Length: 136
Picture (tube, rainbow, N blue to C red):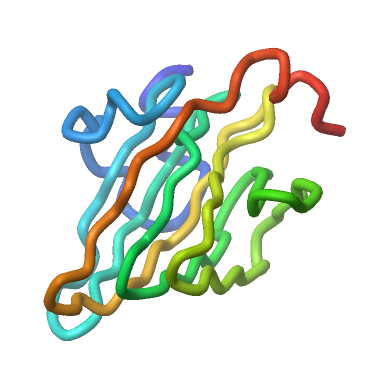
């Protein structure tokens, strides 16, 4: 998908290609830092079909605010949820999960997290094409 099309997914800045975390994603994502005072706020934009690996946030939770397109969110052992603009997802610490775009549409969410000493991310296995293709 062309950059100028991705910039239309939400009203927030697209940012740069998310190369620092690219090894934990299938497909391209873009990251824009919106705020780093007290609460980290990032706009994350996923190209169609892009998703991150299963992962766990140790020591702090995360909030996703969907701002454009359609995407998926899934916690381990639960069905995937279809997300649309306006949806809010709270992810408690220690919950294994993944999120990303639907196969045929870009998706953007704001990611909010409060930095805590000792907090970390544990990146796990990818969502296979076979698993992803079964989502409806």
